[in-house]
Length: 288
Image 1 (cartoon, rainbow, N blue to C red):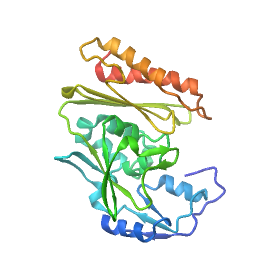
Image 2 (cartoon, helix red, strand yellow):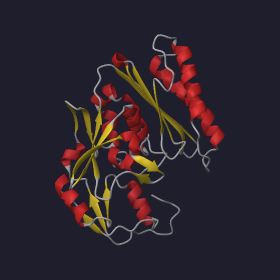
Image 3 (cartoon, rainbow, N blue to C red):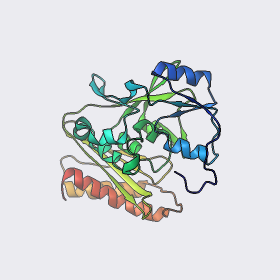
Image 4 (cartoon, one colour):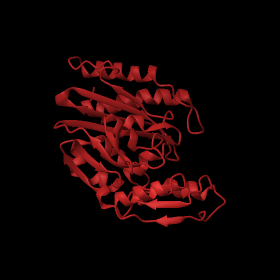
């Protein structure tokens, strides 16, 4: 709920409840440019209440069961876009194979809202402080995006173009997140916040040990998260953990160019990015 808006009601709109993804896509095509999709709806409702957007139609995906599943397929681990934050946290499969995402889900809104927050809705708003996207980027995940014209696959790192802007077209819906399957996965998600629980820096780390692949993403410091892999972090799998962590955190510090806003200065975010990177890597690789 927004406490800054003078409005307590929503603008008038037509509420639509498709029963399956095909019906939802046809509705989006029919009302293209005049409709918004409701996944969790928290940001959508706030924007409407604050009179920042005026959709004529709201298409609610809550009844589409195929978007609420978590499965292992030959493509990898498939997570439906309507899986909510509580389900992400409690899934045994995700805690074992996608630990960064399972931990990030615990920060997706307060506990009273986490049955409402969905992974698709969380990443689609395009805001720097959202928790899902850095975790998905650290897992090298791919988004299945559908429209009435067909399906395309979008790397999660290419979703957000800027604050409040994504690469989704007006008639497209994220239907699944596909994560590469690995046997031995370690990962974490750390979030540094101010007293109002607004994110200053977030760091997600995923390590696929058998493939010797490390990926790290830093969020909340710029319009889009930063992504690093073993090469860009100058990670040496044969070297000492302590030296690797120091080198990697130095790389993050020298690379990121954080924004300044009412939450924190660029300089503070830059320093905390280095500190949080070191903490996350120590958690994943062991104390160093």
